[in-house]
Length: 263
Image 1 (cartoon, rainbow, N blue to C red):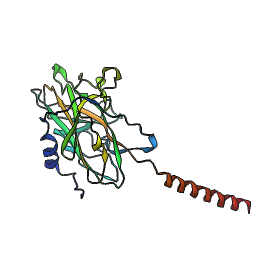
Image 2 (cartoon, rainbow, N blue to C red):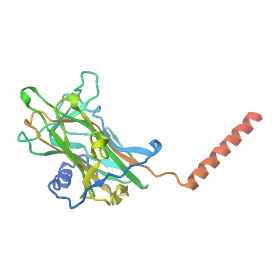
Image 3 (cartoon, rainbow, N blue to C red):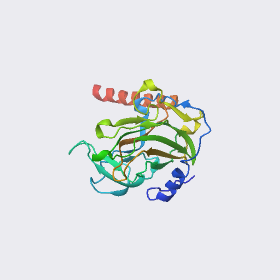
Image 4 (cartoon, helix red, strand yellow):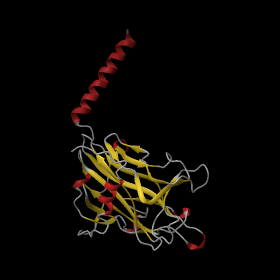
């Protein structure tokens, strides 16, 4: 299956992701599978840190900061414009503020789509980001809750539990797909999903979409800020034959080097 460039395909991405927001999953809760992946085999398929954006300039979408060679990714879109800023003060890391959430508290989405085209069987390992709800004087604020949907080849395969937010930069959270708010004790790694995770084995031509659904805003003028967005995968371990070949090559190199030094 040929990969289609997606950076400018807002309509295609929106149709795929937003068209399934209201879909009710006929799944029973299950735990996101543990990813026991050594650091040496863990790679980022696509990520955003927003340092590649010009601060203070509203734009329609945020381009990725890094994309794996075997991946094509769309930009990151929201319900309105997105603007990079440094909420921690001048000189700190940039975040992306996604505005345009409805002032009546109804949900809106931040989303992107990626296509995998590699020859190897990568295993989807995780999805994570930092987030906080903006707040202003008078009690107006951005979204105060969020959950995440995952789609594989156009089908919704996973939905997280709801995580509540307290407005303010100091109340930021680190959201992780296996432990959304960093608190292992509350069981929030249990999510509204099925127990079949075979779709996590990526083959060439697979499409994935990730959607952050946020709600509870009281104004559209401030929004949801996110940072350090990353999709992680575990690459296959080298086969025994490859390891033996590498070991043999290293022995040949060492033998030649020792002969040169002894000459």
